[in-house]
Image (tube, rainbow, N blue to C red; front, side, top):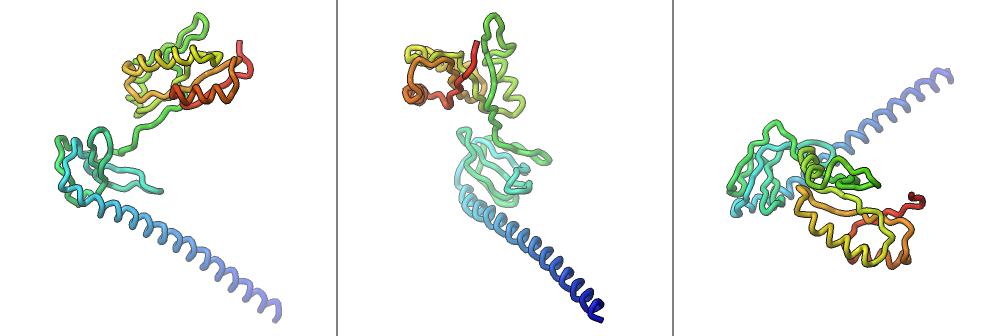
Length: 212
């Protein structure tokens, strides 16, 4: 009798735990969905005011990734920036150009943090220079690249000359350009190197411990 009673209680407890767990995850999903809907709803309410504005481009019915799901929206673009996102059923701003993205996905420009365009290693050169490499990147959805500088010792005159060279080459890029400063056997202190990198707008420093 005690054994049978124990089995009944055990099954009842297990069943209750399973029900609670399932209910918990369903509740979590419901809360998250409500939060996301409310978040998008707030965006839609704010952007409904855009009906009085004018955009250069409106992308309609695009599938964009929000939180953990794709949702269909309209987007307004002006001066290369997204100025509004709203439901397809809501009237948006007037636009010089309208693109119907039904059945298509819309993503922000991707960033490639490691490219070697125009790199020279002794007698060898990279097959892509800044123009051909960045053009290929754009066709792959990449709008920003981080290229590497030639290997320097970190002397200030080298950095100043390199900054001038990089500034002149940006016009040949089809993407946004950022640079990794590459240093071997630096002749100045780490603190001074960082100060110079910031001054000349290099976004990171790559230091070789072994280089030949």
